[in-house]
Length: 364
Image (tube, rainbow, N blue to C red; front, side):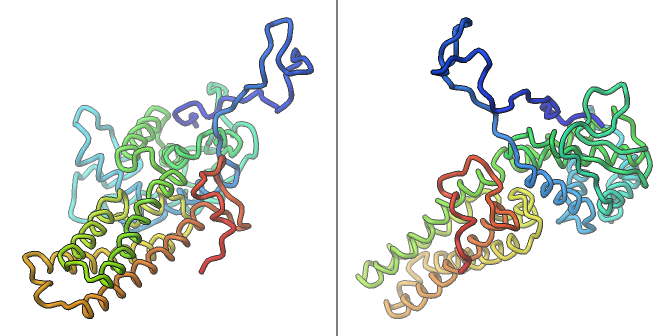
C-alpha cells in the first residue's frame, strides 16, 4: 500500500498552459519573468505502465525458477545477503524457513505470488488506489490481507516514473502487495520491496529498455562489420592468421555484451510481454558465438592455416555471415517487440535517434 521508492505518487500541477504572469513575449513579468525554458522529468506512457504491470504479474506465476525473478530473488537473499540484513521471508515463501533445500521449486513456492498472477488487476487511470486513512499515497493496494483480495494499481501515479526505472519499481511494488496478500504487515512489505530493488539493481544496473537496446546495437554492428571485412580479406587473400584474428575479435565482442547470456533476464530488461523474440535472438547469438569460437580457437597455433585454403575459408565465411544475418533479423524482431505497442506506436519518449523509426520498419 505504500508508494514505491522515489515518491512516484507525487502529483504534478503542470497543465501545459502559460504562467499567468508571463507577458506576450513569455519573458517579462513583475516577478522577473521566465524565457519559456520550463521542463519536466521524463515520464512513462500509460500503455507502457500497463504492459510492465502485466509482465510482472506473468513473471509471478512462472513455476520455472529460470523464468521467475521473484523465485531467483529469494535464493539470492538466502545465499548472498549478510545475516544482519536478512528478514523473515516465510510469510511470502512458506518453505524458506527450512533453509536451503535441494528442491528449489518447493523452496521458492509462493501461494500469494501465484494467486496474484491470476488476478484481474484494477487499473486506475488517475489518482491513488484505495488506502487506509493513515497513509498519504497508494500507488497500489489490496483490499484485504488475504489471497482472495482485490488488487489495484494506479497507472496515473506510476506514469510519473521514468521508463528506465519502471520495471524495477513495478516489480518491487507487486512484491510489496503480494506480501500483504500473504498476511504481512507494512514494515515487512517495505523490507521485501527495498531488498528486491537492491537485487534488481545489482543484476541489471540502470541500463534497461530503450537505453539497453541503444547500447547493444553498435556492438552488434561491429560484429557484422568484422564479418563483412573478412569477406573482402579472403577475396584479397590476406594472410589467413589475420583473417582468424578478425573472427576472434568478433567473438570477443559478442561475449562481452552485457546481458546476452541471460535469456529470461533479457525479457525483463527489455519489457517483453512474450519471451519468444528474446529466446529466438538468444539462440541466434549462441549459434554465431559457437561458430566464431570454433573457427578462432581451432586456428590457434596455425592449425587452421595448414588445413584451410582460401576456397574452404570462403565457405566458412559464407556460413558465418549467414548466421550473422540470422542474428540481425532476430534482433530487429526483438527491437520491435520491446519498443512498440500492438498498434505500431513507439512506447518511449523522447525517441533515441537510433531507434525512432523501429516501429515503422517492416519485419523482413
